[in-house]
Image 1 (cartoon, rainbow, N blue to C red):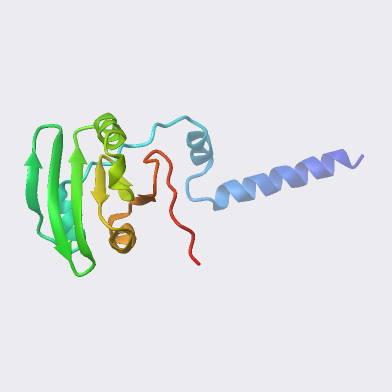
Image 2 (image 1 turned 90 degrees about the vertical axis):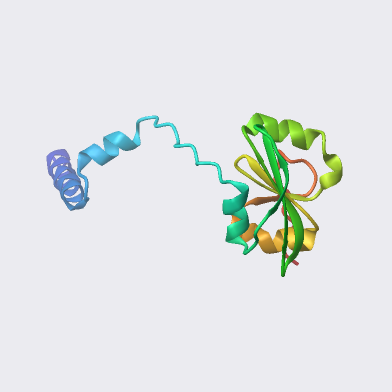
Length: 141
């Protein structure tokens, strides 16, 4: 019978793979569990502005919304932070004239497309051209 040698070889191979891995079988078991993602800590206007070399001039400061104006070598833009994602979505639903915009967790940056493209990488934001719920970053030419 050739089945027994195949099973033995498979068992040996499985043992070698488990022995060579850093965490053993417990890593495989843990990977299968549904673990909720850790929420990102929302950034402040000051933190976002610092990433692009700007000291913001505050325009609005409330419990739900903060807005700061920035001017850098890339150009001028507004940074908004919100107390929740729901408030950010509601605000953006009411502000369609502010297209395009850069979007992140509980923040938006509004300005000319050229400026937003320059800020996209340092801020790790998604560029939205029209609908703020769907990233529509332009494709490179």
